[in-house]
Length: 273
Image (cartoon, rainbow, N blue to C red; front, side, top):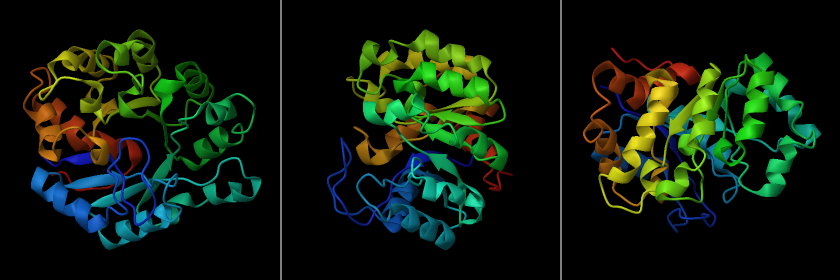
C-alpha cells in the first residue's frame, strides 16, 4: 500500500505560527527522512506563506527535485487584482496540483462574504483547480460556494472540525459537516486528527467522530494526512492510528484513504500498482 500524506509544510526561514515546531527551517530533505522512518511514500506540500514568503517557490523546487515524493497545493494573494492572472496555467509549475488558503482569521473569512473572492471560484472551476480551505471555521460559507460551483473540487482541511476545539468540542458541528457529504464536489482531509484529542495514542475518544465523517464521505473523499510539524505524537503513530487502530478502516477502503484517494482527487499521477 502506497501512503501519501495529504498535508505537510516545509520552509527555509521565518517564525512558524501556532503549534508548529519552533525551528527556523524544515527542509525537503528533513521531511523525506521523517517520512522514510514513518513509512510514508509521498506528501502534498502546503507552502506556509504566513511565515515564509519564499515557501511557494521552495515547494515547487522541491517537487521538481523529488517529483515522485512531493506535489504542491500553492497560493498567491487572492485579493490582489494584479495577481489574478496567475490562476491561468497554475498547474504548469512543477508539482502544482491546486490552491490552498487556510483563511484562519475572521478578517480573512470576511473575504468570503464581501465579494473579494467572488472572482476566484468560477476561475478555479474553469481551470479545473481544486481548492482546500479550513472550511470547518465557516461551514455555511463553504456550503454556499460548493453549491454555487458544482464543478469546483473543494477540500475541507483538518477533518472539517472546530479548529480550536478538542475532544467533544472539536466535533460540535459534526452534523453540519457530515451534511456537506451530499455535495459530490466536497472532500475532507483527515489531517491533524491527533491534535483534536487530549488523550494519548490511540486517541480513542475521537475515533467514533472520525468514523461518522468517513461514513458520510466514503473512502474516496476522506484523505489521511498529518500536518506533522504540529502533531502531538510521532509520525509513525500518525500512520498506525489509521492503519492499525481503526477497526472500521480495512482492505480497499484503507488503500484509498491512505493515499490513493487524495491523488485521484487532486490529479497527482502517482503509480499505485
